Structures are given as structure tokens and as C-alpha cells.
Length: 119
Length: 168
Image (cartoon, rainbow over all chains, first blue to last red; front, side, top):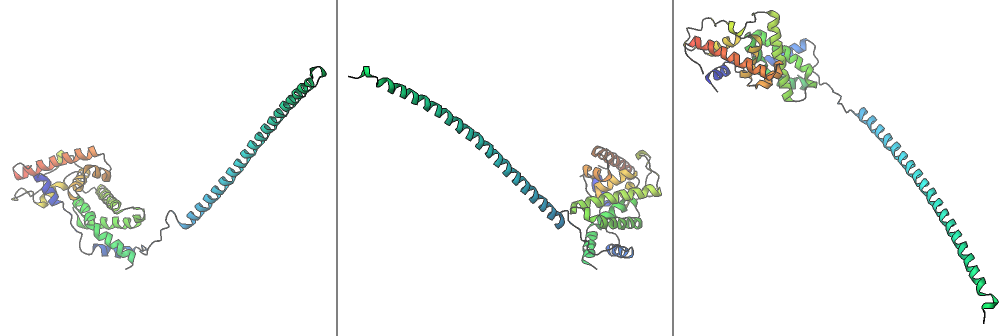
């Protein structure tokens, strides 16, 4: 720090106002009718606000949950319908195959019992 | 005295020297400085719920007293705004053994133009950095630096002429 800086710091150092400054200020506030009783500041997140926020949140969660359950139930129903159709198709195919096999067995059985083939 | 009033009185006592001194060193009138300081503390009381921390309170007080003091000076036009080069020599200090006595320095500072004077007061009374001063007086940091530099050069030149020798 140079000499000029030091001189300025010394010359411009803080000084107190005359004695009783704060008391005079409070007295002036009293005369001006400024209310010095503690002010009740409602915080940004007061109870009514929080209560409404909680209610809205619960409703939102409930609606979302129900919607999800309905969606899952409908999906399961659709899947079951498709599965049932596939089972029915498989059974029809199997039935048809069995009928073919039975007819063939019958045809082979008929050939074996012809009189010319026996000893 | 209510608890609220007691707490506010403590806050006033904590900051009264800072607020009063900024006004006093700028205005050179203790009665006006006290009046303005009281006005600022009255405003502080109304503003307190919106101030978030002790450092915010300090910043707010510095800013408001600086602007009130400059506004006051503009209103009364007690002194003409002068260019730095036109600053008159302080009267009667030439015969002093040490012309850079505190009173002489304060007179030299008082002769600076308003904004430059406030910048010097905040720099040397409050030990504030140029970027902090910029926020208080509403000027870019570069402008604060240049005005401070220029003011110091002028103050040094005036002081040297009074002393008849160089001041570093």
C-alpha cells in the first residue's frame, strides 16, 4: 500500500454518529407511528398452501394409479383373447391332423384284412 | 421496548458507523449525514422482511446511503460539478507542516466530482473492491477502476503541490 492509500484510509476511516443515534431513531419511529411489534410473516409454504398441495398430489397419484390399473387390465384381456384364439386355432389344426391320421390308419387296416393276403 | 425494537436497535448500532461515515465523508456535514442515515435506517426497517442475509443488509445499506447522499447533493446543488482538472486547491492548507493531515485529505476528497468522490469513499472507507463499488453505484467495473485511478492521480497531484514534494 502506498503513502497516498494510507493517508486516504486514515482520513476516511469510519466514525460513529453522535451518541444516542439508535435511540433517537427509535424515538422518531415511535413519533412517526411506525409499528415495532413483531410482524407475523406468512412463509411462502404456509399450512394452507401445503395442505392444498398435498391434496392435489394425492388426487393426482390416485387418478394415475387407477388409470394404470385399467390400462394393465385391458392389455391383459387383449392378450388373453389373442392367446385363446391361438389355442383354438392350434386345436383345430390338431383335430384336422388327427382326422387325416385316423383315415390313413383306417385305410391301411382295410388293406391288411383283404382275403388274398392271408395264409 | 419490544423484542423487535431491541433487535432492530442492535442492527442499527452494528451498521450506524458505516452508514453515517459514507454520508459524512461524502457530504462533509454531520447533521445532514445523520438525517440521511436515519432515513436510510427507517427504510431498512420496512425493507427487512425482503432482505435475505446479513451480507444482503450490508450491501443494501451501502447502496441506499450512497444513492441518497448523491441525490441530496444533486438536489441542493451546493457545489458545482467540476471536471477533475478544474478542482480548486484547498484553501489555507499550504502553511501546514503536513498538508496531508486528515482534514486536508478529506477536503481534497470533498473537492472531487460526486461520483468519483463516492467511489473514493467506498474504496478507502469501506475497503471495497472495484466490482463491489460498481454494484453499489451502478457502474461497470472498468469505469470504477478508471475513475478511481484518475481521482487518485488528481488527489496525488494536488497533494504534491501542497507539500512541495512527491507522494507515492
